[in-house]
Length: 239
Length: 239
DNA sequence: CGTAACATTGAGGTCGGTCAACCCGCGTGG
DNA sequence: CCACGCGGGTTGACCGACCTCAATGTTACG
Picture (cartoon, each protein chain N blue to C red):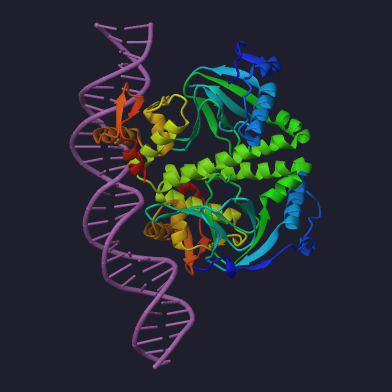
């Protein structure tokens, strides 16, 4: 496995700010504020390019950074003592990870695909936040959102069947995915990643997908491209 | 803790601040700051007493409040469409719940035992936070901590056996519990609550506890009082 | 003492894990 | 061109942990 050194690092690139498309009209104050958080992070962070399947964060690393995915896909994970891996979450372009508190509870992170990541030092951010209370407020909002998301996942993992989990996953990815062009999703991750995310085995994921295809709910082309044939069936199966 | 001799509900009681014991020496800045958050919440919140097994928050309720448990035990939960209940977390004296973002993702909350709860309106808190950036910072810290905690739970739920879950639960409660006097825990919640928390059935929880007792790791007296006979065995079984 | 809520115990079924074989696409190298 | 290996994915047979259903036991409390 590759290490950090493989990554190309481009420190401090204010010009990137200008490249960002400015929305014609902010939908609300909240949006405008989030926009300002984005700009702030772009200013004080540094952009790094990682190839696929490299570790960005180690499990016991001091967590004084947060990360924003600019392109590609990243996952956070933890390796259990018996060697099994649990994926904490997938992060697509625009998502932020590393928000969880760094009291030894840090998850590791690695790239699923090639990825462009904005790395922000928390210390710098909080120095700014001292002067700008709104900034901390946005971080709080993001963290609370992530918390709600993880709690949803707790529900999914603890009391749902394999089929419900897989269906839930597909619907979630289709909702989030920039790569979900209307009626299909391009999954960037392998079956193993999905299994580790859902707390299942790779075989069960495979079998469940086959079952979904068999009952006409989806169609699988080129392994990682899922087409939705009957969304209503999926929603029903998800319970 | 706050000692309030008010009736059912007491709004705005600045005198209460003076009653709070001041730590002889703040262990760190962080501790001192958390203290200040506590005081702020005590100032703007109102204390409410709930009997056992009543709902504090409904599932779809607008989430403009956060709650601090002053005494007793509370749990958050969600009821699935098939009637099964998933418990999101248990909150003991000193814990805060309701931090998750209110975008329709709210969990319901109900008391396990009689409970004294401090209710704080988010709007009031954030109004204060506008002037005091540190305040938001503490909320952020708390939320990040909760996030880390829930992520630990995701690991526990997705890839551990029934025994590992139960053992993990017992150790967690013994670490947190004020009612855990040294070598035993008094569980405030029923077997059903534990089962719903761990994503198991009540029967499995019961059988697992029996197995733990049988192998000499614990001893069960009066149903909800668990004595630890061999902590090392438990830690080993937890993996 | 009697009742009801809570908890334990038992028998049997099922979902998903485990292990193993196989398939498929792809790059490499002769 | 084929042979080969390799990583990722699928398929099948079997088994065990946990769920389900049902009966029984225990505790709390009037």
